[in-house]
Image (tube, rainbow, N blue to C red; front, side, top):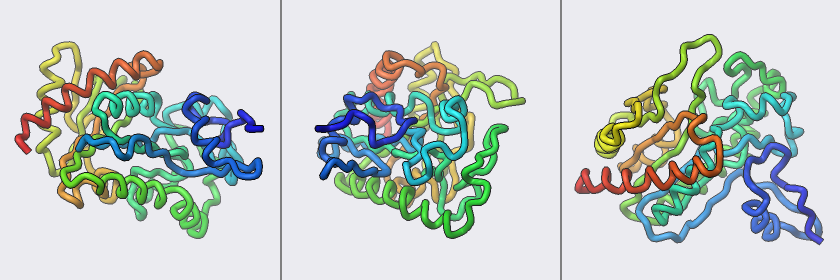
Length: 276
């Protein structure tokens, strides 16, 4: 009999009905295995692909499920991008596009960092010490790269390569205010590195909505060498845009669905604006 105790761990943000098909498929002799990513709709025909690098606050079972942090800390933005997974799924449905979602907390290892980035494995984040990372050495760093980071990126690239004119949209969320910092005024940010072909028209489309405070390369800069957009878009010449949503605007399933539906036609219009 299939147990409804999730193999995905205590902090998985996905509803059990989403987890269940995966759990059934992976069950073997009453043992269910962990995987570091989800790919949904890989064969959908759209040239769009949605990625969500910080979809989950899961700490895999072999790491004890907590990294030594209480549940209240694992529910914060330091552990994952709150609401981003729901928006990503809703957006992918609206675009009839595949979606890739990580299945490990950014505190385990950050999939939106290059392998040699000093913030790949965080020991302190927004005022919180990460006990489970305090003594992580080079060997543990490599083990986590091999177990989580590299399989996620291999899966993303495999799906990205299925369409010759693939366009990548990466969904993230940000906290309204970091500790000791001023409130962030933006509702949404559009981030880019040196490729502005899609981000520029998307910024103008969002600004034209009239009810949004839109940031260009806010609240973060748009490029880190080796990050997800670099790996899966810039290095392949693919059109791309990274969208940051303030997480208090996407806290509930209804808000996530609404934003997914809102962003889809704006993205389609921005893509048409590029004539590419």
